[in-house]
Image 1 (cartoon, rainbow, N blue to C red):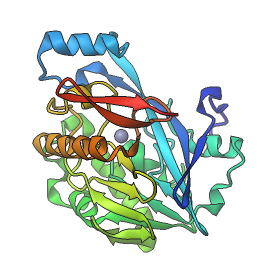
Image 2 (cartoon, rainbow, N blue to C red; image 1 turned 120 degrees about the vertical axis):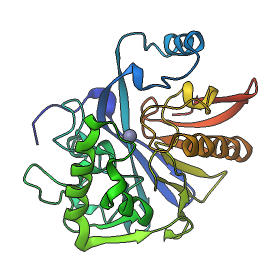
Image 3 (spheres, rainbow, N blue to C red; image 1 turned 135 degrees about the vertical axis):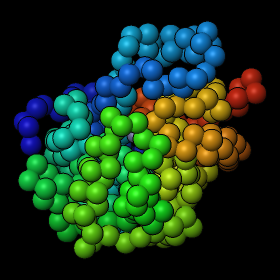
Image 4 (tube, rainbow, N blue to C red; image 1 turned 30 degrees about the vertical axis):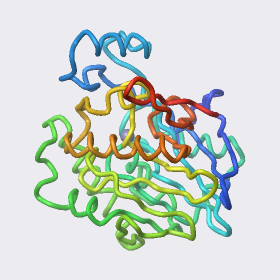
Length: 288
Ligand SMILES: [Zn+2]
């Protein structure tokens, strides 16, 4: 705990979805270079979208929205935030939960969408102790294998080699308590892992049954304008850019057809919305 106050704007949002109670809580935000956002896109069109998003400086703030799902006797956290070692503006998850009167000790299960720092590094505290020593952890086998394997540094810029060290440190910490999962697996009744590869090799999303559906998309859709209006543009953060673009196209088509809700980890807090078709592409409509 670094003792910083929780942001007033970060009070958790809770809503019912089918048999579930879903809460979105902020882990703070990342400060990222705007150059990350689809660097190869046509310059004029890209500049126009960035202006519309209010991202005209060299850096921008990217929210980090954690999803907590109450399912019967289970309290299930999706990803664990950045922890203490990634960026000073992130790692507020535990403080924000505490401020909202939610006891992290009651969390029974944690599902990871992928192994990037802002999703995984909160697994351990500053002493490398598990933040949730009694929880069960679920990681997609393909994602675990990628970070453990020799190809982990391939395709990553050298300055992000630390991502590999960090992923391995956090995965090692949960090793005794982890279950490998794959797309199609149900974690509890009505909560299913779905394939959304490309942002990372084994990136997964979560589908919650009920109503018109709800998909916790993780980093499959990261920007409120670019990811929806130009899913074919390639963000620098995607490990397998072409596959990530295919995943966005498929996911957007499905979300628009089904009128499902989505929760985006990096969409404007709390990142809850729906997808509408617009001018041959899509539009994110916040509903919180
Ligand atoms: Zn992320």
